[in-house]
Length: 243
Image 1 (cartoon, one colour):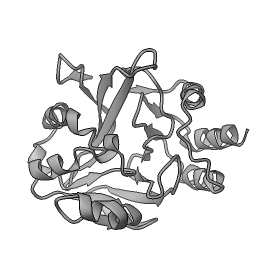
Image 2 (cartoon, helix red, strand yellow):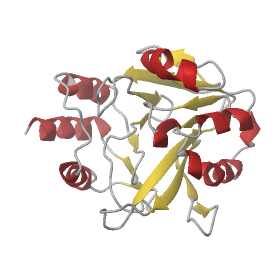
Image 3 (cartoon, rainbow, N blue to C red):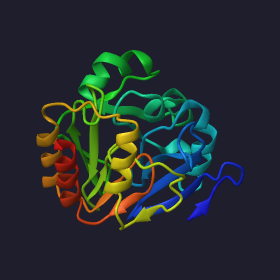
């Protein structure tokens, strides 16, 4: 793990082949041990950043990306749904990477990003596969999972890494970049204290669809990334949500 900013503790770690997790620990009122914001950088011919981080964190995340690649080579600025930690610094990234464009689901492009972004978005359809060069990503529409009509996730198919946004959110600094121990327990404890799930009637079916993609790494937006049988863990989450 490389610390890219000593003052903030922002750090970069390769969690899968060519996929880098950028982590910044932050204090959060009412949450013991604080919180963390993660972004994920996929390095390829057309590099992709998933989650921008909040606007105020842009200098720290930009510094971390520059530790791995030249920032101006980014081509895709992706995110799960419209929220400050997902896309708050989107326009700053578009300015820093002149060849890049927002990458989001069709609903987000239609209702928000076509207006909010300084360049037109690249809307990706449910099930669509986008080539980045030697590897590709597949988009899953997941409306209201865990929240927001426009929500969706990307699967990096070469490594089986599911960029799963707010699923399995864990409190704390997230300074362990990649773990293989239990994250369902800590993430469910956080959900019970601050329930951020919409609890859609289709939640179980959407989690089963994600499980069938058989991810081996879960790239969580808050807390540690996780490696193991992702399909099994997603089904365990579905069971827990049914209770």
